[in-house]
Image 1: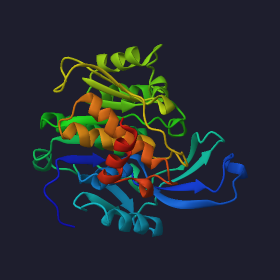
Image 2: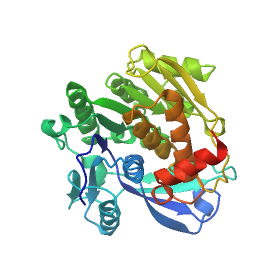
Image 3: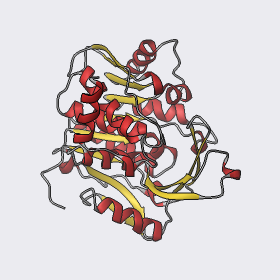
Image 4: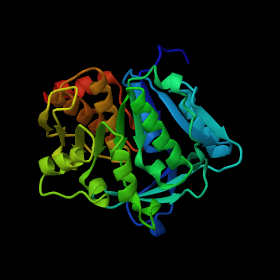
Length: 321
């Protein structure tokens, strides 16, 4: 596909989400539907739908699932940094929902293609052309992908890119612990963090309210923290070191009929990143990001439900929020 040179690079896993036909524990759900997924892949495709097409650095297996993922990405993104692995399988994630649409994940990710990303896959001359680099926490759960991710963040900072980090806590991937230490290392390299209170609790950050929680994250290194709060909307905190206005912002979210929350956080991240890259205020960033996330919940799946800018604009106008 042809496009102007991207100003954003997204890095991380591309995998298969298996979505259940109905709520319930994994042992009781008889049928699942295959969908493309992976938080970074969702973010990359969401950015493309929002007319902010990024580079995407990922590693995909040369198995049938990998072929499906490759075809999906080819329809949305340039393939400059999409690697194919002939010797590994595709990561599978089985998603289950309870009656409140809260999700749980079961991963099959032992030595799969995304875990085999190697340092240096994005050269320094490519980073020099970028303004933003996004990385996710799942890649920190195993090597060599962890080393590759940290290396990318270090070199991105050296190239004056703004580094965006989503811890994306998945306890199933950290059976022996180590998540808090990995997040702490990544926070020292990040400029912007997008997280949920649950992500941060697993990383050892807890506070009585969003302001204290976000401020404690910024004390660890980033200048800006964006918190997604489910039905309560979103909160932003920026220090005096931020290139935009310092202080706090809140947004209550939008009223939509929720079908599936899979990928909503990734959609929020993409919306926030697109708005930050456009130089928007924190208030506007949260409003735009919440609208992208809200629309994503109105259909099943993550990547397949991502909206374009026109849909986001219609929702924001209809609810004047």
